[in-house]
Length: 463
Ligand code: ADP
Ligand code: F6P
Image 1: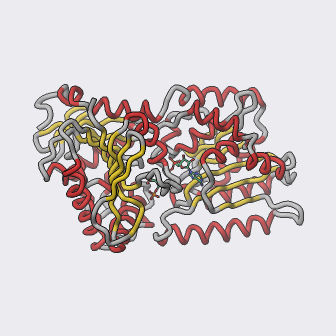
Image 2 (image 1 turned 30 degrees about the vertical axis):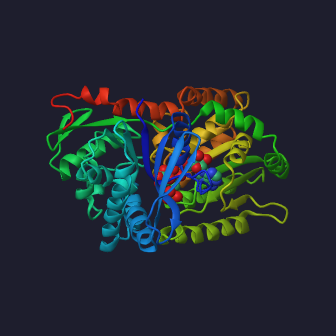
């Protein structure tokens, strides 16, 4: 069997930089632990050390590089999270472009390629992840690497006119087209990518699943990221009796719990969610609900994230001072990550799960909330139409997160929903995720990247 080489900016090292909440690590950890292989990327540290560090846990070897302060500022904070992230989520008004950040982004990708090439073996399959590393497939081919190379985009891909606003994007699209297989979360993302590739590069559409570029076929696939729903369900069933969940339940004194769990990120629609909750309180004065929003700080070097933290603190304070009583605060806003197991227990207690991003590639929290429910007495998921997960979880209460009144109505509907309807909706959502796993997701991608699958490409096959 081929060795898998995963390349991602964020690497959940065994020694514990994994406190960083995020979908990528959750999606890949199980697969890597089971299959083994090499995981290459950023160590999470900022220093002037240029040599990679190596460590191993079980069958997984980790090779990581520190970023210099300038690289962290330019590559990670500046271009990846200050330009690509907002653009890919349709929030281009948050973009802050500086030409030197784009240079740094390109250079870090070249440096990753330089350091990765000597570690590669003849039978390897290379799997590159996410928007931080768009140039990497091109950088590897430029160094003569002919190994099967796949790229998966964890975030959404918007329509060509939205893509066009990111300076430098044309070159990056050409670079990523050096991969053999490009994977997306949804069909809409795949179609948008194909349209952008045709608009901004010489690529041509060959058929639904292939582009032709530089005399080669590039396969396009849809691979919705998954969680281990059954494992998460089992964890939630245990954790809802553990100390943190018991304390939370006791503090509620019978009130219904509304729960949000997110990274503190402008894409997650947190201000709109708080506003919707304010309208719920205005229309339901019985003091019988509490909203717990857990928002793990993320990318605090980026101005938009710092501004968001301030806005949330102030909106949360206003909400409690407007609606609170001497013996009751309706909102609990926790800006710290919580252990994933603890979160699973909280999810099972929650009558309503609020997952209302303005835009999201997939959103694993939506799947986790469904998995965590008690089938006999499930809560209701209020889910943004603009999360990739909505394509699978059609029986959630789907909302437009820009319409705060409609979100408030959905919450009220969820709070009053009869048991029979809650069960029916939950069963349909559960059926959509119960059989899936991150390992299955990863294996499907790796099968499509196998030399046999690539040899079956239409026309000339790989160059
Ligand atoms: P993203 O990749 O944008 O962070 P996802 O919803 O796909 O969003 O994945 C987030 C993962 O990180 C989930 O497994 C979720 O449980 C976890 N997570 C997100 N926010 C928190 C938090 N505040 N505390 C603990 N875990 C969190
Ligand atoms: O899922 C999107 C993503 O950007 C992942 O690539 C990343 O691991 C996660 O969100 C958390 O972001 P960061 O690595 O910037 O902390």
